[in-house]
Length: 216
Length: 216
DNA sequence: GACATACTTTGTTTACCATCAAAGTGTGCC
DNA sequence: GGCACACTTTGATGGTAAACAAAGTATGTC
Image (cartoon, rainbow over the protein chains, first blue to last red):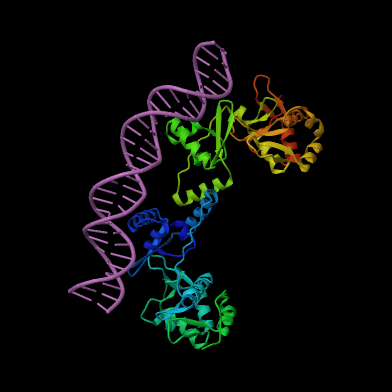
């Protein structure tokens, strides 16, 4: 189970039960014990409970353990249609691989300070305010909204956090600037060539293998 | 047991039994299992069997394990009279803390290539030949002796290797140059001030807290 | 050669832990 | 409200592993 989580994606207890080839009840017991020893954390989202490694120390431990034990890595990643997986909307914000990359990049730029606690609330740093204002977002207006400013929202397909909350303003911006456009029949988003270019130039965000097109 | 060995000293199974607070037979079983999994190695020396960690990977594993588990380190170092511990003869070569430091320094200078295998045989490198000739040792004459050239000899008090074999010539040199002198009533060696100075200057060997004196 | 020491192997007991089925709890959806 | 789903808790069972004493083996010493 732990090796399976080593890719830094969260997984449900049922998935981990399948991976470890034990019954759901056994998996549950093990995961709770791991949680008691602070090796994993849970993030409750509706009726799903997503388990992930507690931190870099645990990942480090697993790495050195695999060096000594020559552990055979378990690979298990849930699959979804690739178009949806690349980029899509989640309520009113950006999700999928692009959403996760954006989230990671903004955190890397230290735009947010994580408010700790169980719910992963983010608050804006001075650096963050600067970045968003430069992009043309009225930060004060976003803050004034009657909803949580920003938080880590566990991505359904990627099993890592993307950005949720009032910072959904980012999606509006991206749509307005034609960095992305929405497909009419699904939640999938297309990255435009211009969007790819500008996100790299303005944010240093490398979208990697996600394909871009000018189709609308 | 493994944490106890983390200081890179070898220990006997009986000592490790005391540390782990189990019976000698239990300790023996555990140590054999650890050996089967290549976590520890044994070095047989007479009726003693010295166990030590297999390598840096294992040490690394223990380190990261202690980070996560907050493991309480076990400290256990066998004691011997401090004069003998600092420096003494072992048959015809130099042992004790000084002997171990010398061994480590020469290995650090890459004077030897370890010939692997179970017996830790060392052979001379080009760099090593240069170092020893500069010190005034006739390397060819040493090689011509009918005995093993050099090997790691487990130090009784330090529980780490010092230099054994024909390279005992080093002790002769040290005596001739008055870097050390022998006590008449014991195997203890005195480091002279001159010896300390020259070993630092010529070999970069820092003898640390070992006291030096000009007494003979 | 006899004895002491260091260590391992064998045999036995005990305890504990993993496992799963089944029942229970909580959440989402129609 | 009722059902489906995700997951946890409970309880019973079986397997196994850890422990030590006692006997065995190897080595050094007198």
